[in-house]
Length: 115
Image (cartoon, rainbow, N blue to C red; front, side, top):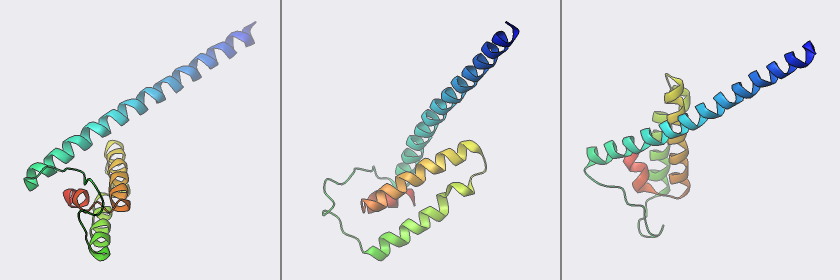
C-alpha cells in the first residue's frame, strides 16, 4: 500500500512538473511574439515607413550580393548565441527565424527593416 501511495505521489509530481513546463512554454511564446511586434513597430518608427509584405517576389529585385551581405550582417547582429538572458535568447531565436524566412523569400524590404 505504501509503495502504491509513493508511486501516485511521484506521478502527481511529474504531471505537475510537465504542466509547469507547458505553461512556461506558452508564456514564453506569447512574450516573444509581443516583443517581436514591438520591435517591428520601433524599427518602422525609426525608418519612418511601414512594412508591407511584397505582393509578388518579382516587384522588387536586389542583387544576390546585397541580399547576402544584409542577411549576414543581421545574423551577426541578432544571433541567439549573443543573448544575455533566456528571454533574450528566445526573442533572438524567433527573430533569426524571421530573418531566415525573409532571406529565403528574397524579401529585402523586411530584411532592411531589421537593419
